[in-house]
Image (cartoon, rainbow, N blue to C red; front, side, top):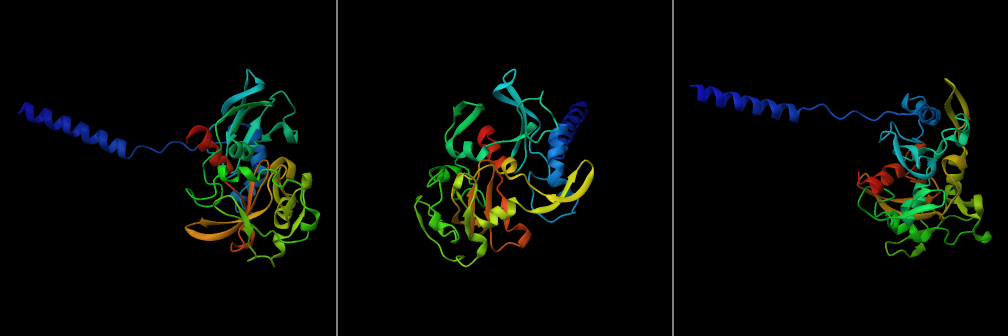
Length: 292
């Protein structure tokens, strides 16, 4: 009898452990771990989180990592505080600087690192990892990856003046070649205008970067210019090209352009507020760097 009771007790303990394991509480969602990060996030994304505006996320609904200390040669003890979001990474290079200054928080040059494979560990210090074979546009596990986009960096660079005022019609093929694509040649959003560093930029992206909208500042909501383009997006580093990519399982024609800090996409079939969106560069970089 004791043997039977002992066996039943052991069985019960095993079942209890199984149930506890099966129904274990989910891991806690990371929270914004620095007041300066929180201030920057709230300006553009708090109105979205509270459903006060309908535009797409600038950072994401919440962080995807805790605050991390990553190697940075000029940082305190050779490190700097960073936190990852879907769309980007926030960084504090000098914690002794003015915390209210725009550039106290910097917005990582993640697309450049992903495309070149040069992981930055200091202002002039890099670790070679190899370009990221992670999908840059649309659903995962398809063309194009960041590695596929590497040859587009500053190629051709300065826009040919004769191309200004004309639509973006270059189409990126899986073999890396560029051919013509005229399906949206009559869409004024695709018109090339002169951008920073004399690159041609699709008008729809210029309009997006300079849009007015609801932002949160100092505990108040006000209508203002949503973005500081240089701070949020940086300079253009590729031209504007079309690509065919699956989005939600459906193949779409997507116009994209890579900037120093973000990848912008234009999907003409989306609702107006979501035709231009920022790629999930923060997610992609975190996966490339940490395998997560």
